Image (cartoon, rainbow, N blue to C red; front, side, top):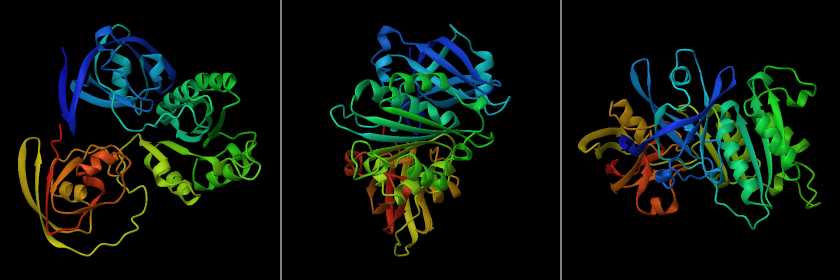
Length: 374
């Protein structure tokens, strides 16, 4: 038996048994699930993806997303989960569910992924903070397993060494793949022997990293390691992502090669809006959502579509307002918009007229949208 819910898009859930549960730090734990033979295909995934878990917390049904730490070749679903408070839903999940219990788990989703290039020489740099290490760990295990020529650098920030999750796994990877993987730990609330590793991962710290760690390149004496970076992965809180993504961009990494995953709601733009648009007022908007048709008017096009519809109290699905999660994906059936940033849609989807409402500015007097894509 499977269950389906609509959370922006139709999501398929299946009952899975908890195979392993482990407390990692005082406020984090991991869950591993048994995947029955008949569901193996349903739970095939790419490194960097997540699943949603449906469970009871304080007598109410909760659906939360958690990134996988397992790599695809391991053929199992392992999750890293942070408990933000004693009363939070994640704490209820930890307290009330144990090995052999059944949870409803969605099929894998998410686009914090990379195209595999096993025959190329690549340099990939990742920045993670706290529980943001989870999809990065999945990526790094997968790349080390499938791309023998790729070298990896991880810069991992935590409050203190007590909060550092998955250190054993990371250190083991560094020991066994030391010729291709280097890991650097940073602490914001714990003094370190080397002042370099004290403080948050931010633009200032990135500048130091580029000049003191990613400078000499043994493979090319005429360039630096930073010059050779092909992809950047960033995972953590919104402000950290915004700061580092812009810093990487200003240090020469194209936006299309900077990939990020949010671990909380974030309402700011990741990159500043660099375009100006002619003012259009009294815009007519028609849209379909949850099988219903709506008509409204936007006063002007100074703000993006999602923000204006939310102000009018329409229940448009979203998890971020930064073009990352894809929850507000819809099709543009009439009119014209400008998609400012896009970390989610593929070229094919854009070609089919799909847009992200949170990143779109209206450029015509009337638009028609359809949020019911499934």
